[in-house]
Structure formats: structure tokens, C-alpha cells
Amino acid sequence: MAATTDWRQSPELARLGGHRPAVDGDAIEGARPLLVLEPNEPAQVAAALAWASRERLQTVIRGHGSKLAWGRTPARVDLVLSTARLVQRIEHRHGDLTVTVDAGVTLADLNRRLGQHRQWLPLDTAFGDATIGGVIASNDAGPLRHRYGTPRDLLIGMTLALTDGTVVKSGGHVVKNVAGYDLAKLVSGSFGTLAVIVAATFKLLPIPSEVRTLVAQYQDPLALARDAAQIAASQLEPVALDARVLLGPSVREPQHALAIRFATSPEATRDQIAGARAALSEPAEERDGDADGTWWSEQVRRPWMSSGSTVRLSWMPAALPQVLELMDEIQRSTGGTIELTGRTGVGAGFVRIDAEDARVADAIATLRSRPGVVSHVVVLRHGGALKRSVDVWGEPSSAARVQQSLKHAFDPAAILNAGRGPV
Image 1 (tube, rainbow, N blue to C red):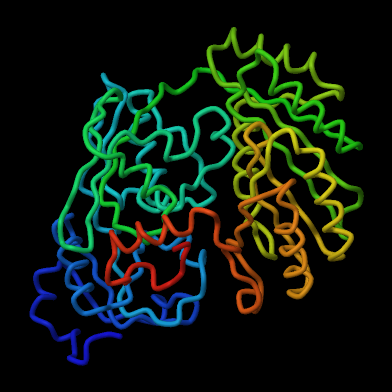
Image 2: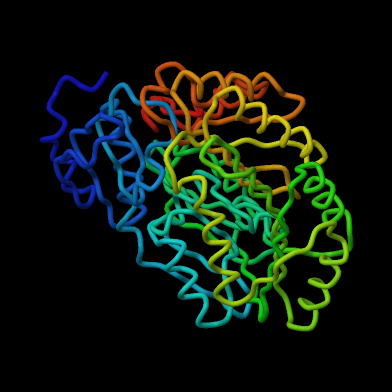
């Protein structure tokens, strides 16, 4: 429990950067904090964490808040610690193809800056104001992960603020640097449960000179799965290989699409497009320029564009036929709308389920009962009172004991993330 003294009047607050009383807009699923801290530099973030630990304040880390609804509903939030003012540093070493950036900088702003030197950080997110810290903490990734991986794969260094008040660095500024423990990999996807990301260093890539996409439509979902496997096993090198499946009573006829995106030199892109077209069993429409960008921007946002619950899940790429059959089964059992947007080459994606809460809960239970088909079923967005009947993270994994040990080592007072998970 929080200390019995009125910690909001503590003289320490003056040394922790900007702070203000919380307002209704700071509430996290109905749990309104008492205070919002907005530090300006990493040392202030670390000092704020140490103070919150001493006072036993349930603390949620926030960038721009695009993913605050992810995780369990908190019983109590005392403090929101914002990284939004950590925006002073973008150190672009364009000759080395690396960048060090503060956690409060948005991914969109970073790529605008990098684009001045025809370089980019090849990550995509559905949230236009997503900060670098938030993207790493949630390991947020879209279709580009087929070629470039997730934030975890592109990190080469990180600066963290710990709950004992220290600021630590891991990795370095060059790709081959192996200094220190690989804390960056550990913290990626930890959802703010272990430490606060205050800065990160990434490896970059040149912006490709030509980008083109083929989109094929299928009546038979198994034909889509066969073509996806054919493309993945070939010598072709797409930057994205995605499926889009839409089923439901409001859909005139089931939609099954496979999209293959290439990005390289103009000559190589045209050759790759020709090779992919020859490998497909259905005719494909080609998109380039604005049409290419629009299709993929929509693909990234589709899990969040309409109502319903959004579930993240993974599967073995070879299990795609069974995954597509499972989507059809869930649609028939819920009677609602089911939309899958998935990275077929890596076996990961999102399912949007728009149906009554009880039927959504049954659908999630069905997904979790098929470990041979899908796994890591996590509810990110929910409708109505679903969170009261479904644990968004599911059953603890075999690594739960190790995760709890790490949590205790990094956050012995258990203040971070207010029990919202995953540990």
C-alpha cells in the first residue's frame, strides 16, 4: 500500500522534473492516478522511480498513451510517469547506419529525420503518435517484420532507468558492439514491468529506391496458404508477405487476400515481381507509389479500424491452412465478423472479433485450446466487460517462474505497471 504520509506534498517532487495533479484524461480503464510526473532527463526518471519505490506507489509508464488499454485492468494507479518530454536527442550516425534516440520521440518523427539522409528504421505501427519507448516496450511490429524483424531485432543498445534510482546502459553505438548484458532484448516486450526505457540505439537501413506490391484474391483459403508457402520457400526476397481474411454476415462473400511487397532497386524489384507473379495460382493486381503505401498503411491499421476485440497470436508458418480453417470455425461459432491480418511468412498476426462479449470469450477460449495450431493468444483490445471474464494474457507460460524472478530483481517493490502484466 502507499505510504500513509501525503507523498504528493513531498519536497522531493521538485527534483523530479515537471509534475501535476492527474485529470480525468489520465485515467487508465477507470483507475485515475493522483499524480503525473513528466521528467525532462533520464536522471530524473531514475530518481522518480526510486521515490515511487520507497513510497510503494503503483506506477504506470506512459509515452503518448496509444497502448494504455493493453494489459489487465488495474485495481489502483497512484502515479503516471510520462516519457513524453524525453525528446532532446536524435544522434544519427549516418555513416555507420545507426541512431540513438530518446524514448519520447515518435517513430514517425524519427523516420522523417532519418529520411533526410535516405535512411530509415524499418518498423511499422498502427499508431501514428507511438513513441520509440512504447514501440520497444510492446515489441510492436507490423508487416515489415517479415524482412526486418521486430524492434528487439533492430536494437543494438539501450539506456534504462531502474527502480533503485540508477541509469544503466547496455550495448553500444555500432552494430558489432557486444559490451554489457543484452538488457535491450530483455526489456523489449516487457510492457513497462521491469524498467523505464529512456533511450535506444538502432541499426538502420537505406531507404529502397523502388517499392511494389502484388495483391492476389482467393476463393479457396487453402490455395492462399499454398501460394504463401510457395513464396516463402522460394528465392524471392519480399519485405512483407501478408494475408488479409474477412469473414462474417455483413461481408458479401468471404475475402481472402495475399499481399507480397518488394523493396529494392528498380530492376531487382521488377524481376522479383515477375517471379512472384509466376509463382501465384491466382492473378494478382500490382500496386506501386501511393497505391502501394495506402494498401499497407490500411493493412497495419485494420485490426484497430473497426469495433470489436483485437487478439494477437502466433503460429508455425506451416500451420497456416489450419489457422485459416480455425478462423472459419470461430466465425461460425460467434456469428460475428472475424478479420485476420497476418504475417504468413513468420506466423504472427491479429484477429479482430466483432461479436457479443460472451461469444468473444468463447472464441478466445477456443483459440487457447488449440496449442497445436496457434499460441501466445493475448487480448489487446476488448469490447464491453470482457476483461472481467478473460485474462488478457492467458495461462502462465513455462517461463513464468523465470519471469517472476526477473521481475523481483528489477522491481522488488512491485510498483511497475500496476499489475497490468504480463508479469
